Length: 98
Image 1 (cartoon, rainbow, N blue to C red):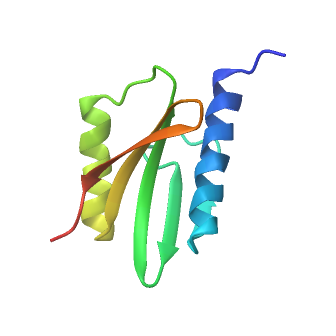
Image 2: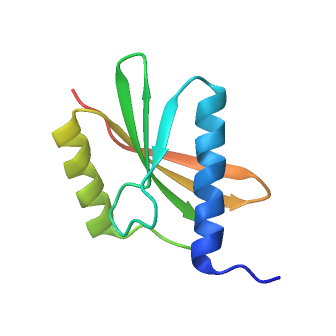
């Protein structure tokens, strides 16, 4: 069975949520979002916004700028989690409040 881009992306988002939950984060997903934030996580008074990417997909400069605006307005960390294959995740912090 061939998965659609949406199905693959959703699977990666659920994987990211599982990883976060295992380390004590409270997590929600922005289902079918076309916005910059895929996952919102909270733990010990901290909030983390995450954009999930997989495979060869790239994050455009304007997307990073939008993510930074979200981080500034929420006063929280923002990361991009890129699933690059075989369970490997590259995590990139794009914003941390001062």
